[in-house]
Image (cartoon, rainbow, N blue to C red; front, side, top):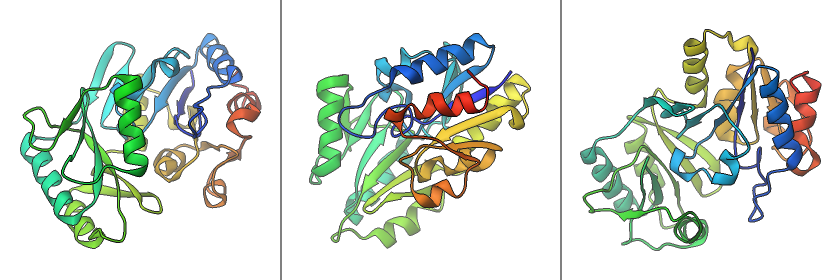
Length: 262
């Protein structure tokens, strides 16, 4: 049995407003499961922020929130949570440093309404509220709690003070100019794979990871069979075993065919 792990944005679906999940990808996932392999989503998103059309492609389980939440079928195997006090403190320090975050929890998504909500953060907020119908909380609310978060900064942000504070207990993942992701130390997409390897008694040599961005590096570096999508950066492509085609060029299907997985 092989275990396959897939990032979402830029890997399973196009990383643009179209959000296309190719039919060839669905076919590859179906075929590999018919062969007795297991397919898992491995994402920075929390479970509640995974679209139904993605879940409908057929997966055995989910590693979410960069390893802070692991689910096999209908059973939650692991869920790393933060205390309400920790969440409030992080939000207040972030406000002082003028970094705008999207606070991602199992049941809700949070923002700080005292800070300007613009750009990508506004786009995500509108999408979650209008399309996904995800409940939103704000700093100070009783139900403001989260597992991990992503954030944006600009020339008015005190990024150095924020990083000095947050990196005491959390990993700071640079996702691109002006954008970062924050995850509790000791948790990553790689630890999620390790957990499931132990759970199923499967060697990591029988694991395959598919990704396209910097936050996929932990899982791509952890397994011997690492696959980068065609749209990935040149730096990422140099660090994987195999580079496949783009999302819309049947990249997932072609890579799985290359390895005899479907």
